[in-house]
Image (cartoon, rainbow, N blue to C red; front, side, top):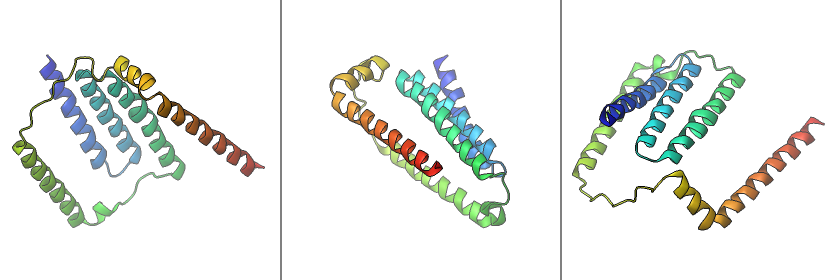
Length: 165
């Protein structure tokens, strides 16, 4: 069953990525294909027992980043139109050929590498383990990052209020 789910989510991730790149007419559809790809990747992370990474994938990438993309698309009113690849089919062919060549080269390199898999504890990558590391070993950098984010928000609000009047 796990093998079947792996293949289903893998095909969904690759299909979503191809749909995102292949949708040249409508940028909103491209963003929705990106959501499909990100959700499939999150499912793959969860299958690898990396629940934290999977949930962050959904919340940050499939949620916030795609909403930001859609906001920018709708703000700029990018409804589509003629893109460079449709005007120049040679450019599209060169791009596809380059992607295939790089993929084949990367595949041949990965097949030659024979490194042993490191032993990893079962709780590695879980939410509890990441929280424990974050609040013990990395407490000071975590707090500094929080203070910097707070300062950035206060500065953005001050600048926005000053521009209004």
